[in-house]
Length: 153
Image (cartoon, rainbow, N blue to C red; front, side):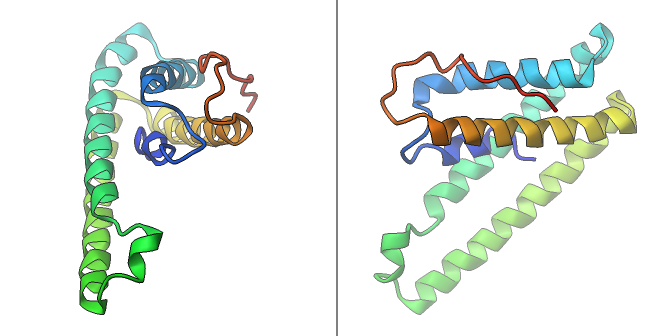
Protein backbone atom coordinates (compact mmCIF):
# COMPACT_ATOMS: atom_id res chain seq x y z
CA UNK A 1 0.00 0.00 0.00
CA UNK A 2 1.50 2.59 -1.03
CA UNK A 3 -0.35 5.82 -0.69
CA UNK A 4 0.99 8.77 -2.37
CA UNK A 5 4.15 7.19 -3.66
CA UNK A 6 2.43 5.82 -6.69
CA UNK A 7 1.46 9.30 -7.68
CA UNK A 8 5.07 10.41 -7.52
CA UNK A 9 6.09 7.63 -9.90
CA UNK A 10 3.76 9.17 -12.39
CA UNK A 11 5.86 12.31 -12.76
CA UNK A 12 7.46 10.85 -15.87
CA UNK A 13 5.21 11.51 -18.87
CA UNK A 14 2.39 10.71 -19.02
CA UNK A 15 1.22 11.49 -15.54
CA UNK A 16 -0.27 14.10 -13.29
CA UNK A 17 1.29 17.49 -13.03
CA UNK A 18 2.32 18.66 -9.55
CA UNK A 19 -0.81 20.80 -9.28
CA UNK A 20 -2.92 17.67 -9.75
CA UNK A 21 -1.60 16.00 -6.58
CA UNK A 22 -4.05 17.67 -4.19
CA UNK A 23 -6.99 16.78 -6.43
CA UNK A 24 -5.81 13.18 -6.62
CA UNK A 25 -5.35 13.06 -2.86
CA UNK A 26 -8.88 14.41 -2.34
CA UNK A 27 -10.25 11.80 -4.76
CA UNK A 28 -8.37 9.09 -2.86
CA UNK A 29 -9.82 10.25 0.48
CA UNK A 30 -13.32 10.29 -0.99
CA UNK A 31 -12.86 6.87 -2.58
CA UNK A 32 -11.50 5.25 0.59
CA UNK A 33 -14.17 6.89 2.75
CA UNK A 34 -16.94 5.54 0.56
CA UNK A 35 -15.44 2.04 0.37
CA UNK A 36 -14.83 1.75 4.12
CA UNK A 37 -18.15 3.31 5.14
CA UNK A 38 -16.45 4.95 8.12
CA UNK A 39 -18.57 6.19 10.96
CA UNK A 40 -17.94 9.83 11.93
CA UNK A 41 -16.05 8.62 15.01
CA UNK A 42 -13.89 6.23 12.97
CA UNK A 43 -13.18 8.90 10.38
CA UNK A 44 -12.16 11.39 13.06
CA UNK A 45 -9.61 8.93 14.47
CA UNK A 46 -8.56 7.25 11.23
CA UNK A 47 -7.75 10.12 8.87
CA UNK A 48 -5.06 11.82 10.97
CA UNK A 49 -3.27 8.46 11.35
CA UNK A 50 -3.69 7.59 7.67
CA UNK A 51 -2.48 11.02 6.55
CA UNK A 52 0.57 10.70 8.79
CA UNK A 53 1.34 7.30 7.22
CA UNK A 54 0.77 8.68 3.72
CA UNK A 55 3.14 11.60 4.37
CA UNK A 56 5.85 9.29 5.73
CA UNK A 57 5.49 6.93 2.78
CA UNK A 58 5.74 9.87 0.40
CA UNK A 59 8.91 11.10 2.12
CA UNK A 60 10.42 7.64 1.93
CA UNK A 61 9.51 7.34 -1.73
CA UNK A 62 11.01 10.73 -2.56
CA UNK A 63 14.25 9.76 -0.83
CA UNK A 64 14.25 6.42 -2.67
CA UNK A 65 13.39 7.96 -6.03
CA UNK A 66 16.25 10.44 -5.81
CA UNK A 67 18.83 7.78 -4.93
CA UNK A 68 17.68 5.22 -7.49
CA UNK A 69 19.79 5.09 -10.66
CA UNK A 70 17.96 6.16 -13.78
CA UNK A 71 18.04 3.64 -16.66
CA UNK A 72 20.44 5.81 -18.68
CA UNK A 73 22.83 6.01 -15.71
CA UNK A 74 23.29 2.28 -15.24
CA UNK A 75 25.83 2.01 -18.05
CA UNK A 76 27.75 4.97 -16.64
CA UNK A 77 28.10 3.69 -13.08
CA UNK A 78 30.71 1.29 -11.76
CA UNK A 79 29.73 -2.10 -10.39
CA UNK A 80 30.54 -0.84 -6.89
CA UNK A 81 28.31 2.21 -7.30
CA UNK A 82 25.48 0.08 -8.64
CA UNK A 83 25.84 -2.45 -5.83
CA UNK A 84 25.74 0.36 -3.27
CA UNK A 85 22.59 1.78 -4.83
CA UNK A 86 20.92 -1.63 -4.94
CA UNK A 87 21.72 -2.15 -1.25
CA UNK A 88 20.20 1.26 -0.56
CA UNK A 89 17.07 0.14 -2.43
CA UNK A 90 16.81 -2.95 -0.25
CA UNK A 91 17.16 -0.79 2.85
CA UNK A 92 14.39 1.50 1.60
CA UNK A 93 12.16 -1.53 1.06
CA UNK A 94 12.87 -2.71 4.62
CA UNK A 95 11.97 0.75 5.92
CA UNK A 96 8.78 0.77 3.86
CA UNK A 97 7.75 -2.62 5.22
CA UNK A 98 8.49 -1.53 8.82
CA UNK A 99 6.37 1.59 8.28
CA UNK A 100 3.49 -0.44 6.85
CA UNK A 101 3.61 -2.87 9.78
CA UNK A 102 3.71 -0.02 12.31
CA UNK A 103 0.67 1.70 10.81
CA UNK A 104 -1.18 -1.57 10.29
CA UNK A 105 -1.13 -1.95 14.08
CA UNK A 106 -2.33 1.64 14.50
CA UNK A 107 -5.21 1.07 12.07
CA UNK A 108 -6.29 -1.98 14.07
CA UNK A 109 -6.57 0.21 17.17
CA UNK A 110 -9.17 2.29 15.31
CA UNK A 111 -10.87 -0.03 12.81
CA UNK A 112 -12.01 -3.64 12.67
CA UNK A 113 -9.83 -6.17 10.88
CA UNK A 114 -12.41 -6.29 8.09
CA UNK A 115 -12.27 -2.52 7.57
CA UNK A 116 -8.46 -2.58 7.53
CA UNK A 117 -8.59 -5.29 4.86
CA UNK A 118 -11.10 -3.16 2.97
CA UNK A 119 -8.70 -0.21 3.25
CA UNK A 120 -5.91 -2.17 1.58
CA UNK A 121 -8.27 -3.31 -1.17
CA UNK A 122 -9.56 0.24 -1.70
CA UNK A 123 -6.00 1.60 -1.96
CA UNK A 124 -5.16 -1.05 -4.54
CA UNK A 125 -8.30 -0.35 -6.55
CA UNK A 126 -7.70 3.39 -6.44
CA UNK A 127 -4.09 3.01 -7.68
CA UNK A 128 -5.25 0.67 -10.44
CA UNK A 129 -7.91 3.12 -11.63
CA UNK A 130 -5.47 6.03 -11.40
CA UNK A 131 -2.92 4.20 -13.53
CA UNK A 132 -5.57 3.30 -16.11
CA UNK A 133 -6.66 6.91 -16.26
CA UNK A 134 -3.09 8.18 -16.61
CA UNK A 135 -2.41 5.74 -19.44
CA UNK A 136 -5.40 7.15 -21.33
CA UNK A 137 -4.66 10.81 -20.64
CA UNK A 138 -1.98 12.36 -22.84
CA UNK A 139 0.47 14.74 -21.12
CA UNK A 140 -0.65 18.34 -21.42
CA UNK A 141 -4.30 17.37 -21.63
CA UNK A 142 -6.23 20.32 -20.22
CA UNK A 143 -9.18 18.27 -19.01
CA UNK A 144 -9.97 18.63 -15.37
CA UNK A 145 -8.00 15.94 -13.50
CA UNK A 146 -10.89 15.82 -11.08
CA UNK A 147 -12.94 14.10 -13.77
CA UNK A 148 -12.45 10.38 -13.50
CA UNK A 149 -14.34 7.34 -14.61
CA UNK A 150 -16.54 5.68 -12.05
CA UNK A 151 -14.81 2.94 -10.10
CA UNK A 152 -17.14 -0.01 -9.75
CA UNK A 153 -15.64 -2.79 -7.64
